[in-house]
Length: 114
Length: 116
Image 1 (cartoon, rainbow over the protein chains, first blue to last red):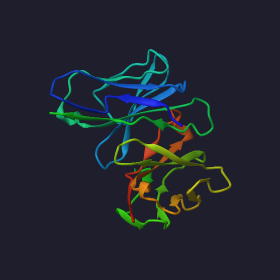
Image 2 (cartoon, rainbow over the protein chains, first blue to last red):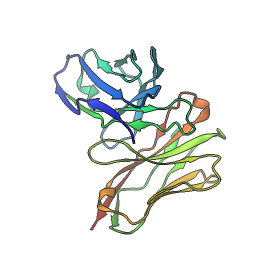
Image 3 (cartoon, helix red, strand yellow):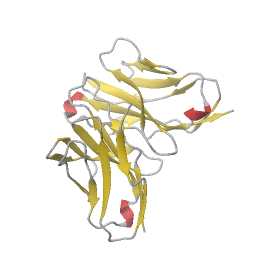
């Protein structure tokens, strides 16, 4: 059972605002991920992390940034939100070295930028 | 090139009946993993079942089973005895060992609606 949390669940914000989407997991997983998903579409990896102080960009170019100062915490920041950032953002984590390395997901944040 | 293909249109299935969701994949890596996730309307992604490329037997997890046909590069999900709570989007995903970063490539999903 996954214990991974995201806040807020829903966010409506105006263009130009700075926002931070929070993601925390209590499973002690080393690896964490951020995906972006437009309605009815597949997920695209935008950031991932192997552990503390490790962050990498994913497959889909994103104007967001991430940090990993603590194992359990992987926040995503948009310095200046735009309507094109409207999407669902899903955070996931997995255990390094496990055979399957199944990724477990949080509930997601639905972002609407006006 | 699309790594995971899910092309079925939205499906309606009668409660208590079985439903099969198609997934084909494209890889030249001999070592890979295949995953199915369920996404209800609330948005979270729920892990259902995993099949490794070297696994000899088809994976099963409760009412979920995976029909793995390696030569055809097919990994169909079978949901038996459908329940109303099975109504959701279902995503097939693949991880290739050569990627190194445990990246998952997702298909576009299959919509399932279970009717009473």
